Image (cartoon, rainbow, N blue to C red; front, side, top):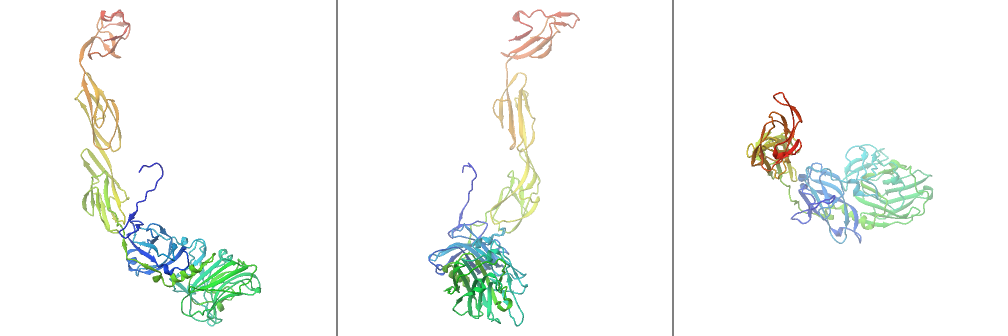
Length: 602
């Protein structure tokens, strides 16, 4: 490709199992196929947080001990999906995760993939993105210790338990849950206090509240609160109260208690010591609301909801398993799991699909057999420059050497000869590309990788004069570091002329630069020139002249090339000879008569 600006190139891999492979760093994946007959409604459910709950030994063996390498993609095998991991047990391979599926179709099966097995992967979760902005609070209640229950949404509305054991950790319907015991006779109480978060307290309509619950026993008053925001009497306050009265499920809402609390009653009896899923949907406005309750996927519309005033009380605390005003007498005696609040009214199809997915994950989707990816690429051990001697696991290796190592296996790479020589070259070890010591251990990665031993190279430059003695060449032969720019020059000797370089340089220019990328030889070539003897003298002899700018105490003899030009001059018109007598320049010989003291003779 031609680079004309910033560019991204993606190499996509296809497996023999169909869809392209997300990344060869993940060696394993499985196909998850959602049964479209379990998806309710007439249109696709977009960005649906699907429960993926499975016990699979392949995950336990293949994934990292903390499961952080597990990720999900769309049916194309490439598009990564948001997911949150609620539980993971590497011993059994049990995974409870929530995956945001872009679209669940009620007419066509939906396929996604789960990938695992990248031992060097960072945490692949994107918890808050699973729930999006419409969810104002999502509490899985899966904590097994401490007093805090986390909110999975970006709002981070952590709940505070009464104590670490009130409520107490328990098995839930979708994962972990909390067991609440509120019993007036014994004085025992339990709750999760969510405080008074504005994103909850200011919700009016539309609104959806959902939860799983399992009533263990009847309370003293028969009232068992699942979710309660309950202001005090005789003040303007918003009530959002979901509770079971006896074996009847009710939702209460009002703007002022003196107007009379309105309720929506689900007519089917709630059985004890069984899990039930409840969804409350409020549409319209707080002054003219329409409320429905869906239990275990069955919807029941409600009547008797009237007009309310003063609908917001920002000071009222919200509780799970109890309420602010009545406390123990209206608290839950049983287990609560997966409480959610959102500022939209979920469709009937959405609510029914949630129940089908969470009540029986194993029938909601099927899981295919493990698919193996293109596999890890080779691990290459090499040197710069290439061809030097290394050792791998104690065995000599002339670089480069490639190995099909098992990901996670340990190996020793070493430079046992830090100083090495070659023809016209000598090398000194500098470092390994991964920063390791001269001899060190590496762990084979799950993708193709290269480890390079870097050496400082010095190369021999040989400079030659041809024929010998016909001139000079510089610099003299010697060692130069790789990449060094060497200035090479030539000068002809007497009776010769420079004709050009050969070898690593060429051309007639007498001065050139050479980059040392390896051993080099440069020859300066000269040719013999035909000459005639020439004598320059004075009468009397012994007077001072200059020839081509150089002093000459006459007589001086030269061998000049035929046809060459030269400059003759008298240093001074009046001179004292070797005999002590003064002499004055008079004239040149006949051949150069009538010329000035500065002469050019052919």
